Image 1 (cartoon, rainbow, N blue to C red):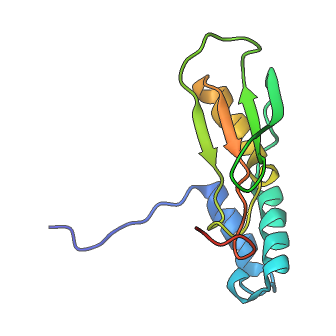
Image 2 (image 1 turned 180 degrees about the vertical axis):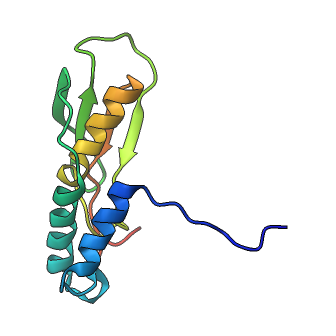
Length: 131
């Protein structure tokens, strides 16, 4: 029987977490909404790799019941046959984040799996509570 669990954290992630712990900034949960959103974007810029070069990065919209929904299409190929795609809803607890906060990640996904990625910029709470 195993009595102890060993947790593994990649060295680069461990270094980033150490950097965050060393800052004097209050936890995001203690910030106001706008400050938390700004902090989320700033942390993302520190942690994100540079975006990958793709053949297609295009902003689009899709009609919705409360107005157009912004989308961003990522594709490593300039042309392709109809087929599967990834629909990406960014993180942030439905309160923070947008197309730009996950831009680098979406370029990475599209490049690595060779499928189009459609990122959705949904409306955020608390301004737009669900449903």
